[in-house]
Length: 161
Image (tube, rainbow, N blue to C red; front, side, top):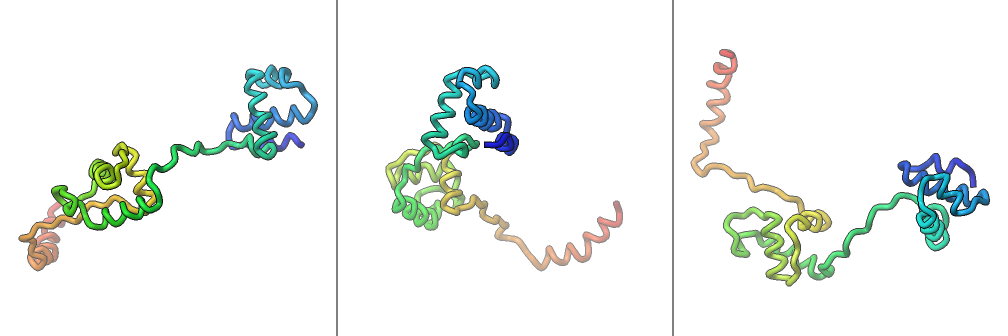
């Protein structure tokens, strides 16, 4: 194993783990590796176990923490999408806007699973549901009058500046 492996590291921690593997391959003892890299022997031992059990030195690469498993089944997730499509007002909320808190209440009420509102956005993103605010326009809005104002009055105001 060449020293180039540790130079390809994504960050210094990954580089240290890969360097430990390189030193191990060069015949160094775990205690000497720990001393050279400024870590405990236990840390080196864990890294070497990861290599043995995880399929080689690639097991020492940086990896994203998997996080908790989704508590909704695939059927529940499809049901949630159908419920969301019905709209917020269909579920007793005032106004048509879905908020994270409202979705958390909906999940609890309809599917029996409690979610913190802060975690709902991740779930919605996985489902391909984006948060959108409904376009609100005054019912008295007169498009013709607005267009006339933009064409006639706005240029005069703009010139005055």
